[in-house]
Length: 420
Image 1 (cartoon, rainbow, N blue to C red):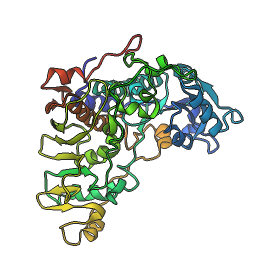
Image 2: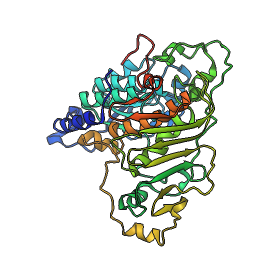
Image 3: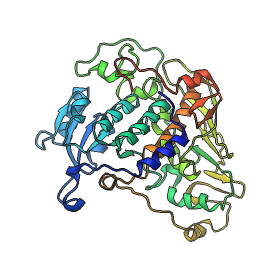
Image 4: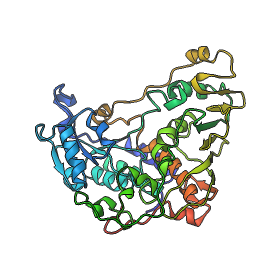
């Protein structure tokens, strides 16, 4: 697959803006949506995170999982038999339904791209879990598919537009006013650590001594693996603890990275590019099991930096630091009267933060496949550096590294018959 460059992405967006397709059943008379008509949904993946998706707006028509126990539990949770919810084992049956508008993807990341592209090809709009993709190349393929099939996409992390940003005690909207005003100067450094209010969840690590176990009767393990390499079954590989293995995710960074770093990308005005360098401080990694890291530093072409401090080494770290000032947790700052100044700064342009509005108007959601691709790419840069235990230089235009081993991880092979 030929890499998607930033320039090609922007060109594609311009073309995309001229043509929009809306499912006819979503529109009522003269293009107006009848108040009584709900958008319809199907959910693929019935693990822990799917419980939250059950509560999302829209009428739920179907659920799908390769684990019959997980599927039965979610059917019970939504009173599915009584409410006309159809259970499926194969996601392709779900996306083939013409009466479903939105597909939610709640599977491990190694399935995200394949399911997303198949769903978009089938005319569905997409609400998918983070990280957007397990590899950079898969993310690029998702962007191309959204353009080709003219689909709307929402990634399920929301801190760039609502809620307090984890333990920082701050909202991205107000921090964005600060960074946009240049009151801190430029370039900026952002530190993401326990000191500034974040938890890297280092309990998501793999085991290097897994013994083969019998596959539970309720689990179709081959279907769970899908495009991932075939490896002997062990309960620690699947369900929640899958995050500890490179084949399916990237540990705590894969789990929390897009939650934590997408708002930072937005604050640093980097929604159309990626860091050009990544430095890693960690021990050498196992070929299969994800371990922990001490520090990861991303550097952009303009000198902006993002520091992931896994050891909480800097006990006095500011969340955002520039040549003219610092902002710590809870808006504490060395700039006098910062809280008052924030209120006086210009408000930001509005974003669409209701995905059903996006589906009906065909106007992009606040966090979509375009800006989400770049924050997912940042996560994957860190994962590749960690996996190889190498400092790397990256070209955001060509999506390649200065290292052949790292570039090989941009587009990783899939186990047949699965392919993008």
